[in-house]
Amino acid sequence: MDVNNIFSLTADASAFDQQSLAVFRFQYEQNPVYRKWVDLMQKDPATIKTLMDIPALPISFFKTETVKTTDFRESLVFESSGTTRSNTSKHYVKDPALYQRSFLDAFRLFYGNPSDWCILGLLPSYLERQHSSLVYMVDELIRLSAHPSSGFYLNEHALLSERLQQLENSGQKTLLIGVTFGLLDFAAEFPQQLRNTIVMETGGMKGRRKELTRAEVHAILSQYLGVTEIHSEYGMTELLSQAYSKGKGRFFCPPWMKVVVRDEEDPLSIHPIGRGILQVIDLANVYSSAFIATEDVGQVLEDGSFEIWGRLDNSDIRGCSLLVI
Image (cartoon, rainbow, N blue to C red; front, side, top):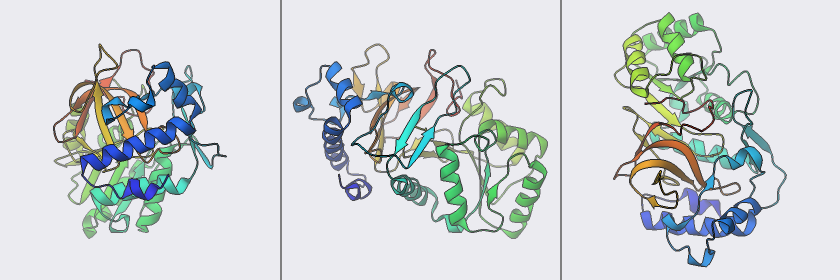
């Protein structure tokens, strides 16, 4: 499978569909777990002709199965945060360079070169455990930014505030990316007026606070940090790609990623737009599963952007995307 074909995709929907069908055939042949699932769904690969026909693997399989396309010795294993009472998802990564290309190409698409930014990571709980795909991504962005103040600020809120003010005074473009409860704690302790800083939340309340809607979180952060919009990142352990929102919780995908929606009453009814349970097509996930049925509830809009409203009632609580509405 030539990954260059994946990352050379543009906004051409027909090209995305054709590449998706090629990845489907590859994964059906080379991924035993996915092949078994497709067969259990009584789907004949010969009849899969459109994107909406392609079966999506339930995301829960990453907790119980080794999801690999081709037989390989993994270079990395990403693991979800989970809770002490639940199994964690594991994503076996064949080639870290593929993940790096995916998140770097997406970042450059939405925000430009990392070297233009000072990048500050506020990711408590994620830094304290191993195998976080989010920490891996932010660490690489920090390295590529090469700004002397870029780095992780675990619980050093006073130092982080001091750094932000120095960067603000110098007019430096800054990205403060943080887990939701960490940003809320910091904003309450050190309210300030940011003019050259983008604040990006990655989700994640993890039972640390009363549940809030995304709109409530953004309103609090905007008030305390003096920014008009709060940006968001949508990613998960099981994916190699991310979608980004530059405000109001509306996410846009890079060209090799797409979100569709399945009917809550009929899981076999898949639509390109509408409300329901979201499915993600992540073509960068070529050596795992590119077609994943999530437990996120929301809607997909006509331009392909999407919103997250919450999670299915019976889905496990995990570190990302825990904001409910």
